[in-house]
Length: 176
Image (cartoon, rainbow, N blue to C red; front, side, top):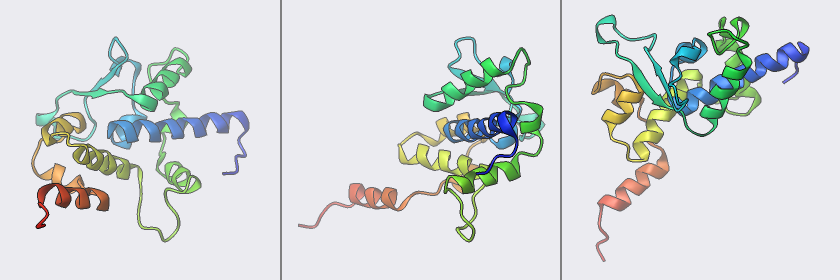
């Protein structure tokens, strides 16, 4: 990716990369990641505790999302770079990041022209699918993603070919 913005552009590119990593490891929507605040980090720094942006007002409950691996490192980096501000991402990165995130996907080979559709929201579907494949009960995944249970979980789950093969091999006993 050609960067014509110097160090400011590099920091913006790092902000978008951090958004992608946090989205992948938490299943959060882009709007929730972009608007993260220092106050939404638990006192021990192991969880994000936030009200999701997209839920019915009557069903809003705080999500308690564990920060693991690279997501924890990204959040800590964002906290240290926030320079005393409450928001973890700079205004410039928060304003309409969808196109920049798409460019980031293309630059790292996740999405190519004519290669189907992928967006930040694809990270959410991947998160939910991977949780299912790992055997995490749907109600636990729903608690992390903020789904009320039932229908939405099934809409996001997209088992991989390997998971389908493993399921059949586990369930169907050999005849011989």
